Amino acid sequence: MNNSDLIVRTLEQAGVRWVFGIPSGPVLTLIEALRQSSVQFVLTATETSAAFMASAVGYLTGVPGVCVSTVGPGATNLTTGVGCAWLDRAPLLAITCNVATPWLERRVQMRIDHHKLFEPLTKATFACRHGNVGEIFAQALGIAMQEPPGPVHLDLPEDVAQAVALESRCAPTAQPLSPDLSNQIAAAIAQALQSSKRPLLVCGLSFTRCAASQNLLPFVERQNIPFVTTLHGKGFLPESHANSAGVIGRARRSDVKKFTDRADLIIALGYDPIEINYEEWVKAGTPIVHLSTEAAESGDGVNLIWNKACNLDAAIRAMSATPAVTNDWSIRDFHAHRDVWDKALRPASVNFAPFQVFDILRERLPADGILAYDVGAHTHQIASQWRTDMARTLLATNGWSSMGYGMPAAYAAKLVHPDRAVICVVGDGGFQMTAGELALARRLNLAVPVIVLNDGWLGLMKVKQEKRNYALSGVHLGAPPESPAHYFGVPCRAAKTADEFRHALDWSLALNGPTVIEAFIDADSYSTTVFD
Image (cartoon, rainbow, N blue to C red):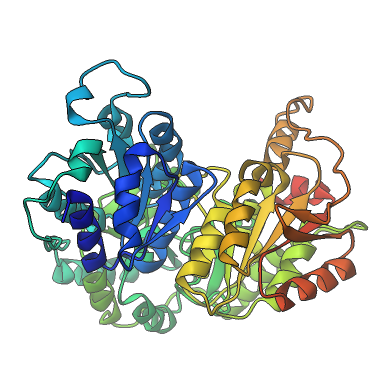
């Protein structure tokens, strides 16, 4: 058994099922070990997509996703996707296969300092040497899963990968839990509710990692508290619930802020400011009870009356035991807000608008279906408009917010959940960045419809220029050409009206393989929804 075999056995024991990447000379020994294991090597078009796929797998499963690259340019390509795992809090191992050990301190072709490259993007970076490989990989797995989860980098020289292993397989070590502060939390919540007339609950990214997330709903109902979420928090409390008041900081954010500004207490459970800072949406001076695995950083006007790192499941149990306290909210308040907000998200349009695409997709996608979407103006619209009652049915990047995420994430989701419907939405700019991954989908026969919102603009930047009264410059992709019959052998259809889109979607969902639908939309509605 060589060290590559040892690495693969350690990954198998941890529950890893895929390693995403691109071959090169230094990577071949690891690929050969994977070939003889239960872990599948998945060839991607770019290392960036490999890391995005690993990040999505880590988020969906809780088991670290794994990606691999070669030295130098392969490693730099990998960093963009690794950054997604870093700021979106997904467990991931990033393996860079380096030149042989004697060359590590030499100035040779392609070699750079991988550790300095990955240090600001990872929880830890390790150098694999002969005799420490199993121990280091076990340690890396534990660190990646420790709260808050994130990426760990491992640098593997070619001679170390080929050398006979000196260790047996190693299991990841148990990681410490956040402190149980139940008694303090129960007292703080009870006192805050007694002093409040309009309390509001907000749930964010850290809440998505709670084992007891569904146990929060009885607290919401007993206290008659409205709740909002961040983009990542969607679906972990049912958005069909009467007390659901929407998503902060996204499309028609002004309507949501009018509602949240009425609150005189914010209970923030599992809130991670990496998505949006408190001062960007909380009215200055409003008391905030911050319950998360990390304490929040304060800012101007941020009134944190409780701010300690704690075990979130224990916090939910403590909150659930809090006696009911009457407040001034009414169901009419919630309904009136939702009616105004929903109408504002769908402005009058004589042309085929993006909100029509999303309404049709919501009609067709089953409750447990997964929607993965890229970064752009549509990110804001989907976050606000889309409704789901199921956890982890929406895949997006928020902390990192890099274009190019949507298609790799969708294909990763289909690998994790082959029996569930998965759809991807991507703008025309993002599609240009990742269209090559359609070859991956065709090769693996991943039945994922990719919906390309084709309007000829970098829509989000267009809206930002409009808001600043700038002339439109550097954001026009050109008049969209007619759709081809296929991309890389993946069949494609065009849709220029809502009816054409429904027919194209039915065609796509009926096929047992990847497809592309180009939805030729009028993006003017973004100008009145995205930042208003």
